[in-house]
Image 1 (cartoon, one colour):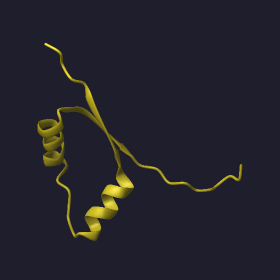
Image 2 (cartoon, rainbow, N blue to C red; image 1 turned 180 degrees about the horizontal axis):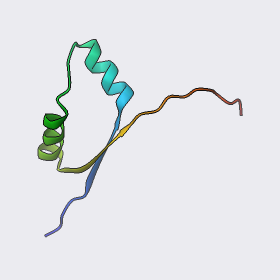
Image 3 (spheres, rainbow, N blue to C red; image 1 turned 180 degrees about the vertical axis):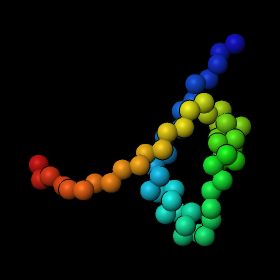
Image 4 (cartoon, one colour; image 1 turned 90 degrees about the vertical axis):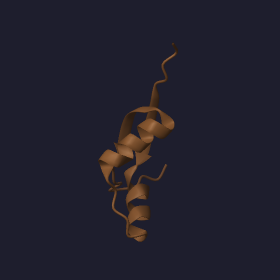
Length: 57
């Protein structure tokens, strides 16, 4: 049997801003189950970062 190895990469900033603008709160256990059941996701990575400076190239 060919097992899928789906990975979700989620931008936390976009998710946070969108849900707070709609006055929603995320239940992360249910969110993880949703990703697993709907998209067969095995791993989830949240990207949390902030740019503190910029560089002119």
